[in-house]
Image 1 (cartoon, rainbow, N blue to C red):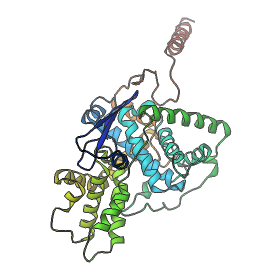
Image 2: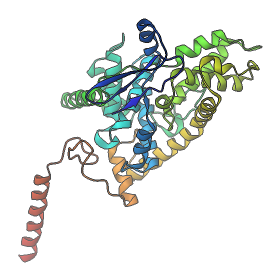
Image 3: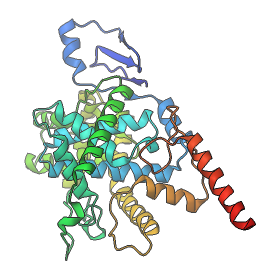
Image 4: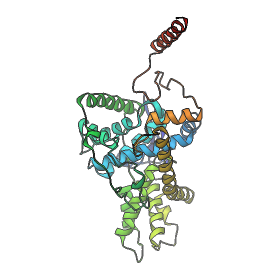
Length: 387
């Protein structure tokens, strides 16, 4: 994996790292080692254009299915962080870590909910708010059960930027739906540790994530928005930053935190009608007009795109659960497999890591055993027709 930090005027160094080793390349600016260490905590490794192109062009999954998987899994991660009572800073870091992992690993290599749980578990373990594997097992077992309101059709917010989902009417709560037997927990625990190790390996054990939220608050304190309470514009700014975690453009992987913070402030000021400085104030925070325009449009487009993704996921779940009483829910690898089958697309029985993995299955497929089973079935058919 290669994630390269784009050099900026405020950054003294950037890193290019792969799975085996890390190279540190110094920029031309002359700063003390202490300054370099401080600035390294305010920047993130960014995706290269080649990585973004390969993810879209060489994946076996159609683009719309990739977006549906990404959107639903990121929403599941946010729901898990909320129910685990984790700070938004921890949950947002898990979202970014998950996006980085899927940039270099195929989406179908593991169950989507397992990767989400591993991201939350890993980031929480490194924070002051660790959560046990059993807590995660109980929570994800509930979120994936029919009793959960996750991705319920009537739980959609009125606006993705400033509203919270309302609980659906007549919601049923059946404890048997999310009862967790011990063998199910043991299986989940094994998959959780396997996915955690896979994430660490794919990211070269680099779990550093710098969020734009603190920078946005600092920038707001430096700016003077006339006739507007800073609390109002602050809430709107943080809402845009949280919504950007779901963006299909992967804004957190293509822009540095300072640019994300400035774009969120710009959008929030436009929404509340705040009077911004007449000069090009974003240049003070090391953001040019072109990047600001791209981020502003990208953040504003997430709302409509998210509504479409919800409809696509519900339509996909309805197609794979014909005759079932389930009410939508989290998309799974089995759902994606069924959607590909309906489209007449065949997904190979292998992944990029060299392991033979069946779509929608949890364990590798033994090709020799599978061939022997098919031969036995064929012989049984011949013997049955002969008799």
